Image (cartoon, rainbow, N blue to C red):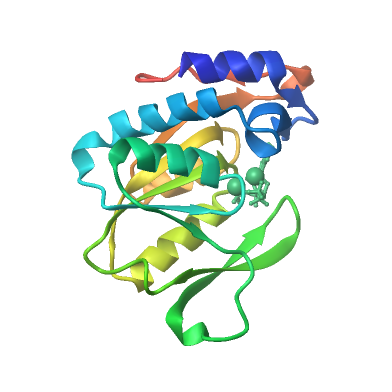
Length: 194
Ligand code: G4P
Ligand code: NA
Ligand code: NA
């Protein structure tokens, strides 16, 4: 997605060989018009998948997920990162380990909002090692719902998540795939359809 890549080129900050900071439009301040275009793009790519629900994770997945939900005309759920202390029997939950933060979060979704008739599109802001996506896939399995695919705003192609998830036969659509952040420079992977 050209508009997104331009935004990353102009406003992204390469913090290290592995970390790209995009606080000015995605992770802290949010650019609503860009989010709208991102939502449209996800909706176009999954238009024929009969999606009934979008599942994301707080906090940075919510903005792109809501915009995709708007264009697909379906509700958006976001997994919460701290399990509430009561009524855990009414929750699907899964453990997500972050290599970046070296901590484990329990993520959870109410059984009220995800049912086995659902066809689910997962959406998140970043795909790095794929732990968040694995956790969300696990929750969809618990619900016995159907997974239509995964929509990612920025995939770091040099980390293992994308390959692992695609190897499981899951469709992954990333709007920008970063091939390298070496020497302070963002290099994109050119991909058909991007
Ligand atoms: P993984 O799920 O793919 O395994 O990713 P990882 O544990 O490495 O990521 C932990 C957090 O850091 C996630 O946000 C993820 O979106 C974010 N992240 C990973 N790599 C980058 C990067 O290069 N740049 C930025 N800006 N973020 C990155 P989170 O903890 O869920 O936070 P949030 O959703 O509240 O923002
Ligand atoms: Na995230
Ligand atoms: Na994030």
